Image 1 (cartoon, rainbow, N blue to C red):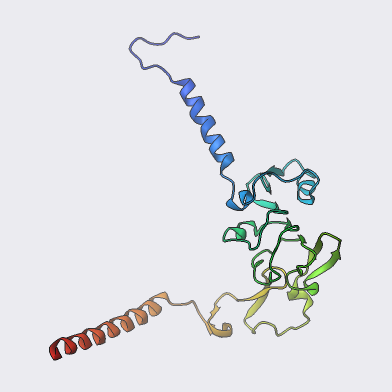
Image 2: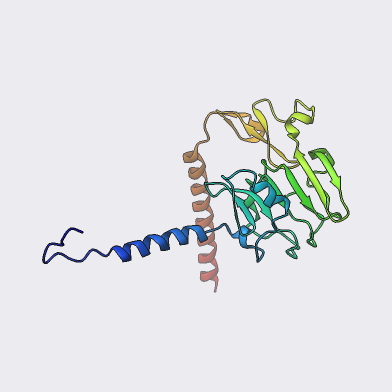
Length: 229
């Protein structure tokens, strides 16, 4: 060990190591809220756990299966007494597999899965329909205690309607049974009929002029009322 120069401040290596460890622990504990919505960890035999253990790049954290970047690939909220999904459910929009069975869910999942384009396996209570209906999935299997929806279909390819989107728009999936039309580059507005970039300057100019006009009218009205009184 090299001698320390007299008068130099001590090197706080133990403190630095402690700080580094605390930062690592803090980073590890910073899970998405949806992963800790339900107390406890998932069962080793659950389908989400089995999926997560297929490759070492995936790890189990609370109720989630995460990749090395912390992206949610699986979510297991079975038997959590859930009646609704809460505001944090969209955090799991990257999930490939989600287990929600053994919960008293409401049978209305049509708009819950907006943006869940990667979802390939969804396990639900037996009395809850697959979002989008059977046409939104390749396979729907019924079991005594759950219902499994597998293989999300791309409705843009399966509807057979070539005019589902306007001429200057294209169809993109937006979740089970959901799709949206996106305007091509250089087009915007109603049915993507307006060409050119959207002018924010014009928009805010009109908005500002309208607001100023309304303010002047209200001010004049208040003055008349004040004089009359």
